[in-house]
Length: 57
Image 1 (cartoon, helix red, strand yellow):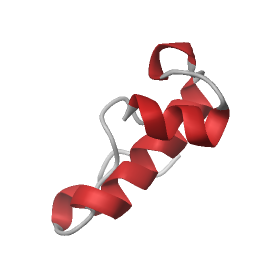
Image 2 (cartoon, rainbow, N blue to C red):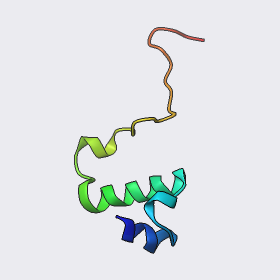
Image 3 (cartoon, helix red, strand yellow):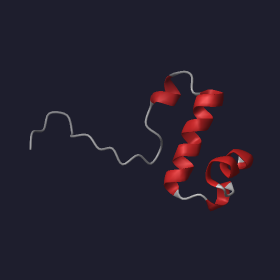
Image 4 (spheres, helix red, strand yellow):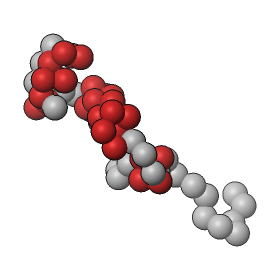
């Protein structure tokens, strides 16, 4: 994983910012584990919000 980070960003995993780390995670999922429902669901800590059911603002 660290080698992939160095190839893509020129620095190790611990030096990546959030955007770079997210891109690295996406690539790892595509290469090694992107099959199934878990890969399509939002990641933990997502900022995506939905309106409560039954309420209209």
